[in-house]
Image (tube, rainbow, N blue to C red):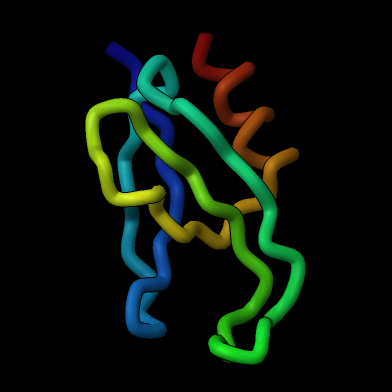
Length: 72
């Protein structure tokens, strides 16, 4: 099993998040802050092993795809 290392920023604290790319169910970019959040640009990564809506990470879709390709 190969994991990729991403970076979460839950409660404005950056922490590593290790994900098995075979379990990524969806990814999408959140380009800017909204009225209800002051968060910076981030990406949501949803995994098939959790029903939490996804993890907020600082890596872009392009960076995540590159990590996945490098770890195949």
